[in-house]
Image (cartoon, rainbow, N blue to C red; front, side, top):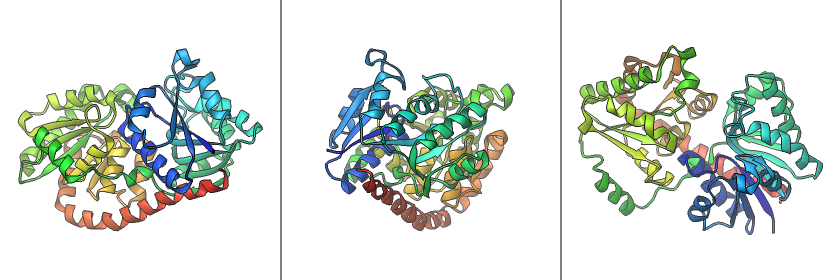
Length: 388
């Protein structure tokens, strides 16, 4: 039996990461029947329960497994006791490089030469890379690429980062994020969620919002505080509620973002017009389906933009890292972005109101683009046949 190790943020805390894993497992299983997947994770139970339809063996990354998150014996064993290693999503960056609780690049770069020595191919699969801002990160990235056979990136920005860094890389394909092929649940299932949460009761429509907890990382050197951020998001929500007459849903796709989301919502004047939908209660399929029902979505987390594109929902990206900018460019929506350094209530609300005016045209524009990108994502699995 062929064995594939899948490296990613596979803890179950992030709906976008779970969408990548779920769609990857399905795509590869259909293309290469009988394959066994080894999934290193800090949450063995979650992987077993949510992906039991596939031949998945979760591997623990806790201290009692001989690991400090992604650095230790069980991670090393998962990378050398396999036929193929896949590095997925956006886990190769050099922020907090020496912190194994946060950074994957340092540990993967440390173990990658052992794979190469054993002729175990490494494939960057459905990946984005960056930021890589430091020499230590560049050197580590080169070690990973030297041990890799193939790069399949989900955006052009990753290739540009490689070229700008001047690193050597193997055969490279630009495909698309497999999360685009998330299958929405049944209408009956979604109707229950909508009724339970009291969603979409306003005939004027609903605007989606999404924020994340990395305020300190993008805070203009400390001059833009967490309170400033929450006030900007809440101010934009207040404006669209008042001027467009819509309701608002805040989508949480990473458990750690729930606190800052609640802080934003607490500052909104009309609390009765706001709902929170979180991956604490709902699956990535549920969230993708609900994002397909809003009129316009504005998000910081890239996968809320990916889910929106998959459902042909007009989107605005609050861009604070390369993968969001790269994705918007890929789907022809690069003009619909709010750079983090320009984030104010007026700027964001103005973008949402502009997007609202052309929402039908944007929906029609996105439909063929989404079909194209979904097909590109499906083709990625076929590239692995040469290895297993």
